[in-house]
Figure 1 (tube, rainbow, N blue to C red):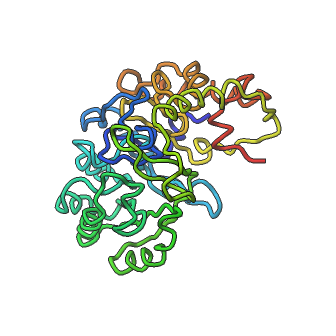
Figure 2 (figure 1 turned 60 degrees about the vertical axis):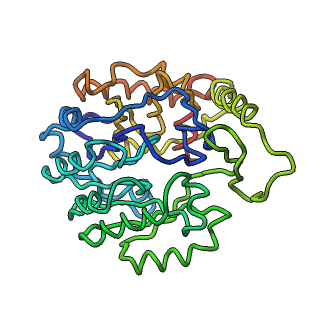
Length: 349
């Protein structure tokens, strides 16, 4: 695995806080207020500067995007990308100041956000030549909220427009669902009219299923069966199945995966992932706080992690446990110890 001197990119989850309730997000269960074990925390400017020393910033030049590779998908040449598993960039108290610190050290930055927090003036401060921002806009005002729950489409547009008007480079990031596909052409045209520099379709495996309110009442459904089901699902039953699903997909899987090769994002991109509590992982797929959080592969990953918090240990030391990940790739099956997340996310035939 990579040594610290080889790292050229860092994906940062600045905070685990978020104003939205996206149904397929790990920080809730289909809209229900539910914490599966993640800490509610964020990196402050002082903590960020402790990890991202001026010397470390000098090597974060990003990697040239490949035509059909992971670099193109994962934010191109950004030396630091803010794209959390759980939280939204704009929820972090010191978000702007942290970006300003990076740009002062010539680090190219990319931000992904739901864009519905803060004011237009706040977003205009981020409009710097080396900063790009991807705004999650899944349709128009009448469909966007079906997935991006608790966000305001009009506010996202106003914030994006302020960023663009101040000279910022904005991307329109569109997740196609059955309920918004018919609006893609309109969204593309609106993005061009407003001055977005890029329109990006996001295909990341978000599935269908029921959506609930914060307190567990059935709200609507995402996916092909968009009408009210004959039998409205009960969140308690689905949540119980949700928890047991993780073990059934991981340590109990005896499927032979010895013929699969791994195109490791971490190694190809020369990238690491730093979570909102300062812990360091090879990539975001392994970065779900394995000490506490219930997620697929957690029972395997947490056995490998050692001394990986960059607020407690030297950053080079925090990378040492990565070799233990690569050693699992020689295993014939997930049940034998090959990491589920590596197989699930980066396997190629």
